[in-house]
Length: 308
Image: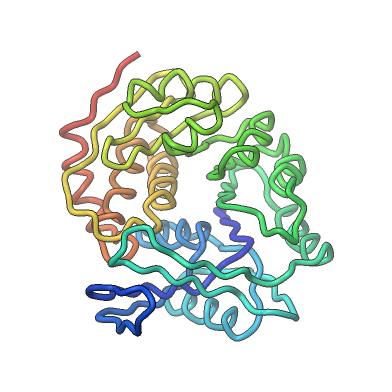
C-alpha cells in the first residue's frame, strides 16, 4: 500500500488578477479551490496515474471538512485525524504574479494527536511506500520525520522524503529510498550556488554518501538530474512547454518517479516518468492528468541522456 503524509493540509484558493494594484481593491478574473499540501498533491497525481494511495495527516474545522469532501469527490482515499480546535489553513495563491502566495497557519497539533498518526504508520510493513513531504508545523516536534523513520526502520518500507535543509539531512542516516531537493535547496545545504546540471552532481552524490538511495534534483527550466541507487547519473533538459502553474510540480515529480519505479523497477524509466509528471503539472492549470503526463513523456524520452 502507498501512503502520503501531509501534516498541515490546506484549501488552496488559486486566483488570477489582471493588472494587480497594491493598496487598491482588485477583482479576480479566474478562481479555483483545491485541497492542497504536498502529500495530498502526491496522492492526487498517483490517482491520476491509476495508482491508489491513502493520504494521512491532520484536519480541523470547516476547512478540514471541505478538504476531506473535495478529496472524496476527487476519488482520493484518506485517513486524516481530526483536531478538535482551530481550522485547517487556507492558502491564497496569486497566479498572475508568479510565486506569490499567502499561506495560513493551521491548527495546533497536540502530542496525543501526533501519537495517533504514529499508530497509523506503525501498521506499515514490507512492500509499502511512504511519502513524507513538506515542513513540520511549529506545534509538532521538529524531529517528527526522524521518529517516523526510526519507527519503520528495518521493515522494508520504501520512504520518499521531499523536505529541505535539516529536515532532509537528519533523515539520511535512515536511508530513504528517494530524496528530491531542487538545485537551490541543494546549494543552500552546502553553501554553494548550483546553476547547471553538471554542477549538482557532486553535491547529489554527497547526499547519497550520507545515506540516500536515490537523489532526484529538480532544476526548473534547466531540467533535472537523477543519481540512482547504482551510482549512475541520468540528466535531461527541461521539456518544452509553457509554464502555467508551478504549484505541485515537485510533488508531481516524486509521484511520477515512484509510479514509474513501481511499474518497472527501472531507474531510467522512473526518471522519465518523474520529469514528465513534474513538467506536465507545471504546464497545466491543475495537477497533471495521465494523458498530459504521457504527452510530455513522449517528448522527454527523445531528449534524455544517461552517463556514468
